[in-house]
Image (cartoon, rainbow, N blue to C red; front, side, top):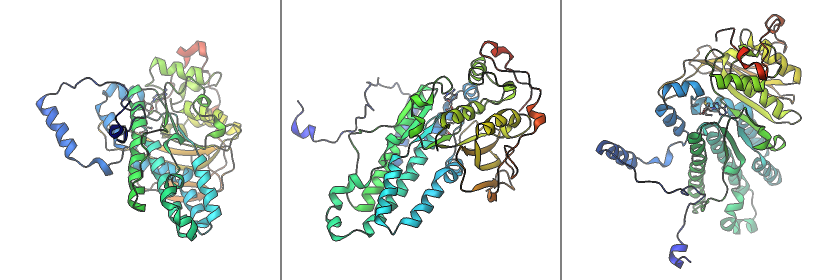
Length: 412
Ligand SMILES: C[S@@+](CC[C@H](N)C(=O)[O-])C[C@H]1O[C@@H](n2cnc3c(N)ncnc32)[C@H](O)[C@@H]1O
């Protein structure tokens, strides 16, 4: 039984410090560097920095093999804004004067769930969570502005009900143990930062410790199991992320075997980039739901032969492209930046309310948005057809038993 005073001491828990840590063996330089880091105020630093740290310490070969390149905040916003954030803010703008509608809107946000099936250190989940909490803060502000005298008296006691969006709405799958652990902690840190913001805003200490709700990060190969086991598709609002950059010529034997397992009987899968597995599985996962997805990818899946193979199947399933960032130059602040050109494709089965193509005059610059009637797999405003020539005549079918035949025939 704990002493009363000690029992009253706030603790974090969440099984965060469950395992005993051995004492670290430091050189003088390491110790001094650590002390320098401790002198810095980390309070306002985005937990997304873990992605950069992790990428920087990773051995170059392992990084290439796993396609582990973290996504900068700027690029994450390019994806989450058109996927869900812009339309949520627009809706908020329309209903902010109506208390009942604000209440329903807030409840809906609390029911949303997000899945990143290659989450790394959780950058997408962290930024999506932070942005959702910022929106929630505005909802609480707007609701309070509309409150009557009786409700005002309950404000201090109700803050924990008023702020309800939580890390348990965020799901990730990551093959590597270390980043998977970091993703969980990063979401808790983002939670802490947003709680501090709530405290400042309402002049009342707001914390969620001991940690009771936790993010759902599964460590495993996303191509080896059904994503419904992580989050049933019916409950998933958005699939998002940046699956690994591995061209067909660079794949390891294990990745070729993954491709063979995912693309059973798909003609020409030997030319596809590893990332296409995530498109395929996302399309299977979302079937029959209104879930929407957006993935960052190497632009090769929208050029040359690949659209004919991958997209003819996706379009045949009923997938529609709602928005796309055309080719831009990949960059982030970490060492060992991937020298690739990327695209972002937003897609789903439901008819999009509007379609937008983001075009780049300068591959390293900012895009401009252009409204489109339709978005083809080549990411232009054109009917959703793929070139018959590129879809024809592929013989390298990926069979489970023939993974050796699943080899690249084109360079990326
Ligand atoms: C391009 S990184 C993106 C990481 C993070 N989402 C971000 O944007 O910062 C791709 C991530 O996928 C992970 N990965 C690679 N193959 C995977 C697989 N088969 N299943 C699950 N994760 C995988 C890598 O370890 C890496 O963390």
